[in-house]
Image (cartoon, rainbow, N blue to C red):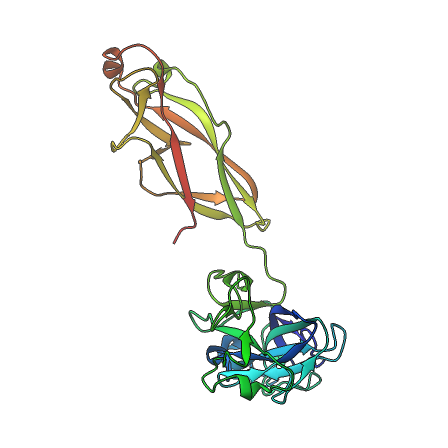
Length: 347
């Protein structure tokens, strides 16, 4: 979210751009365009986050009504925009009266703002932009994913009310749904895709961040070597042999901060322990113990790697505990195993 987004000029207006729709005329003219099936996105949207109730008041968790506004450019981009507030289940993009857009392309932007006034120079209704806490997230209702459609009249001189029904559907003998990404009909277009939300604290939920979106640390796990070899004798009994380096790379980490990650180690066997299998032909497997640094790893059980710092972190991956008696009974040759690691943020 930002102050005075898009066409808005007042620094009291706070909002976010949801997207842009481009309506292309098939015959060079567009007749009485409208937004239909918009009931889910009409009449005010509650937005929750840290905000003030008065100019010198404290920031508190509160809810403020925002509105979805359409901003059309009937004379082309750069021309004076036409602002409309979405109400009820259908609303004109330009006017209730019949209107012809002579541009071959009509651009319609969608905004979520803290005003429902259609004068782009007007101030917000209640809380000014300065009442909202900068550098903090603001959330929309859980599951917020309203869908709608764009419609146009088939002939010049047809107003919005003539080619639509009160329930927001189109009278198909007089109007048409605009095709969006190859789909037309009711509810063919989302107001915003889930990928458009910018709340880094919960990227999968509907919400926006007011200010510069903070970079979220990213954790990348890998082994230093993809394939390694070692002699079984070096890992017999109490012996431990370092076979690899387990590494976690932290991108966008904050200098001086430490992090932690949960790791789960597994292999391709169904046994409760880690196992190696003959490379050539059938045969009994060899069980072994796995260690991260000096910490034993229990197969399939989460373990915590703490004290991670930005950039590269590494620990030795060791193997040990192979039974000398079990090895003596096995056929000579090479044995192979595959280790898989799943890395997640701790709960």
